[in-house]
Image 1 (cartoon, rainbow, N blue to C red):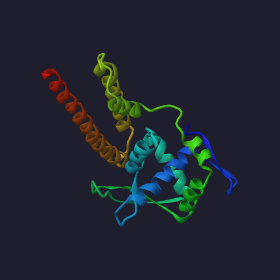
Image 2: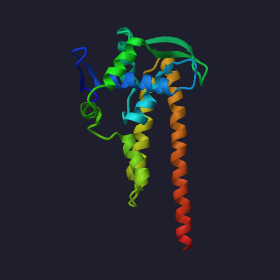
Image 3: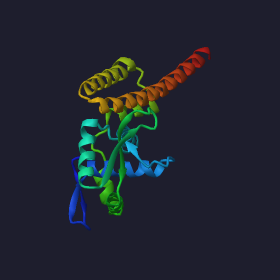
Image 4: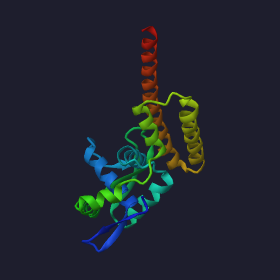
Length: 203
């Protein structure tokens, strides 16, 4: 679905859904930011796309898009201390040209835009969330659902780390911290289910 194109009538051009989503994510993060810096980092963009657009994006996909957006003057980039880790890393901000493009994307016919942004398949991450929300199947769910998901996740992380330069490692470090916090949330949910089981056994 992310290879699909969105037609921009005013420009008589097309833009890929992936490029549109990355640019929209930057704009949305900056609008939601309470900081005066008005900059965004790569790991924030990826987290936003996963959480808001159900796109389990990889750094190898998002950073080439960011590079092209920068070359086309839709965004600016710089290097400075991350607001959380305080380490030097690349940050991005949106230009006037980029804001105009975002507004043009958002001004498209709602049905056409929704059709372009509708995912064809559910990611592993969203499947896991659905399982958590709807309740796990009773037949050995840990072995059947949770273990493969975590095994694949850990393998992907290991492969990703092996390919990174120093800046990439900083971004991955922040992503892992975010992942740990989300896994803690899953732990809390499962511990809540254990309490339910204890209560039910006493009845």
